[in-house]
Image (tube, rainbow, N blue to C red; front, side, top):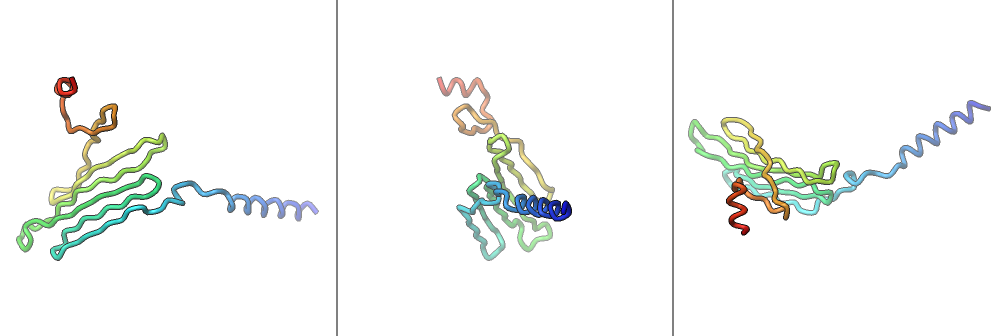
Length: 126
């Protein structure tokens, strides 16, 4: 009698675990997707999903047909971290290897700036 009860409880727990709600990442949809490529092989693509993940990348060939032919890839991707903050990673790759760039700081209004010293920024803002 207890064996049947035990089997019933185990089956119920397996069914319950299988029917658990999915997290929002598994339900994400692609809301933007673009890809272009030319006759040389230069490309550009980007996509964005409904859960805040996005990526942009472009690749360009240099010195085509020469011994030092190489491709330059520049891109970035972003996602929402567990604290709800958007994280962005910018990178490039070329004949010298792969590089990741330091994140750009943001001012309080969420506008990115490119390394303007604080004193200069304060003067410009009044």
